[in-house]
Length: 503
Image (cartoon, rainbow, N blue to C red; front, side, top):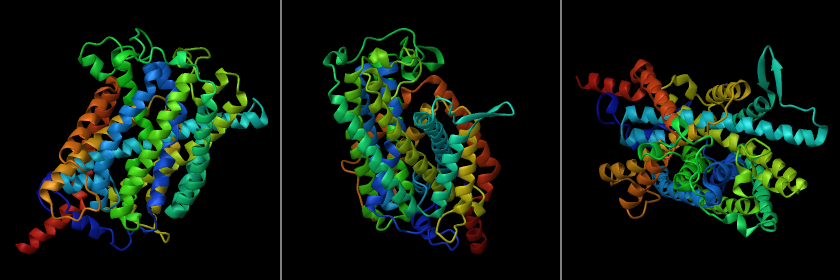
């Protein structure tokens, strides 16, 4: 422990020692394969099933594949930094825990508060999408009269989202290993569906659909200007971020949502056997798998359908999905298969997002920045109280609120976390060169600096409205820290006891 006040840091040794604290100990039963499954499970879902077609139609045109490459490159650079940190500090909490060891308590709180936003909003938004696909599948079986939303007292209740979150919260409470096995089965199904899309879709590719690969910038559209224009486009005086170079960059910032997940792997480090070896393998392995699948899928979809037919305002109006590409060619049976695959895919996405949220809250509660009783673990080695709290909050959000247009809110928070983790590698290398590192980022300081630059670039290409919402959430976090967390922090109390003892 070092420093005073809001800049006090929690040593790596203390963080690791706290993992053996009675009553808040997590069970170590995950291997590299389990972590890879978690990563693939959360990354192959909402992004590939919903964002691929939408981004091509509304922002990037056929160059959506290039947008995935840009976003994947930024993630790969950040993933190397996450891998070093997770192998050095194998403790629950991911970027929050890493920041506590390098930048101090205040920035650790800020990043923890940021991760709460990321995981909660993402889980609620994806659960909402899952409910839409459930309704589609049920209508295949029972007819058009089925709906996953019902009216109650003037309020729309999405029972599909409620059912999903309740079941997954119970599964996570039963044990992380059981969750991993369930995730493995579902992940295998959705990977097969993605391979099915790629193989079958190749037969319907029209090379003319790839021209122009980067369409000329267009005026109008839902992200044309004002608060819905990208911040970078606004700063340099651009009039639109629909198509053209600005559209490609905005598309990369949006499809970044599809890669969110490898950072969640880092939150399970405390539950992993031989974390110095297995966590880096899980992070880098899952990211490599999904990047290849994303680029291949986006190339196929962009070749199957003219990008203008994938726009949200193109007939039939509404957000387009992978199923849209097959429906465009009249291959309805394939569109139905894709919908069933999406239902399976989104299930594991919500499960792993809930897991990440729970582990971040658990770590913050164990440090006293949130109420300590939340960190108590049950007989199965899982934080039952945190699991229930997260399940209730996400279920309420997904059941009663409209969670549309939230992908960018998740992205800005995640990119901010990536920047801090990448910078933290440089800080910890300088402050603690003696630490054992199971994995070391190559070409330091070049790789961390490139990761920071790439993530900052993607943040600048998110909309002005997204930035405003993010700043409001961060301001609220600052208020909570000074009103509660600073006074209840375990690290601060330990320091006070040490001061009294010395006196």
